[in-house]
Length: 299
Image 1 (cartoon, rainbow, N blue to C red):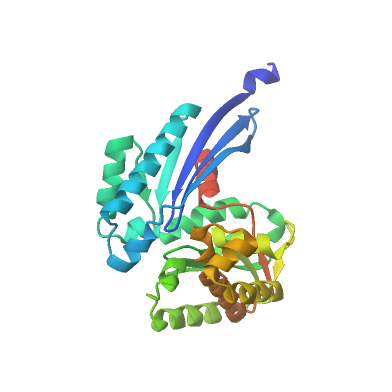
Image 2 (spheres, rainbow, N blue to C red):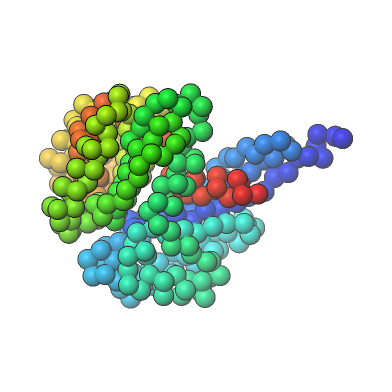
């Protein structure tokens, strides 16, 4: 049989509806009959910030709902232009915690035809794990995996690809920005991290989320080299001393990144300190990538 007979190509998409921003990732999938090769075609990020009201008021307000619907209508048009019928949309803590989260998801389904899965923190972590840990050489190494979002921080202890312990804490960048994180929750997170990492040797941290990726870029480390604890701390201190406007000017940050990057740096710094992790790996992957990988596995 001619090898070309086994070749196929399709485009698939994933929508990551986060607390701070939402992303539409479109990928081209090349299959030669034996394996899939995936290449990014397009990434569209929109700073709708669903968590701003969800975490303060317990529900998503009318104006934010309208912005969210417009964003999803735009995504629908992009999907149609690319001719994509295979996609998946997942929402995290903002829609999960908002009292009207399910109603908002139903409204979007009715207006756009896009069904939204409101996933748990554990499911969110599993999607990202599936994308990060594909290298067999990590089998005997210990990692503390951290995903810092607007509403929550997901933390897992891994040996290689195996998740040993996992927990979700309502300590997110938007919550910290709005000073709605009780000190008790921070103490609980600290105690959990210290207890679970106490007997591990040479713990390495893996961080994901838009803010972690931006801090990594600002430090100037070249991928795949990890970022050192001292480099993280130094950048956190630099950012903390600047106003939001100064961060925007000096580091060319968007407004919706400039305000939450310091809370994210603070969380990351604390977790590295509590776990005694000297290095931080920042893979080029997020929830949307993990969703696509999971979709391809299910084929």
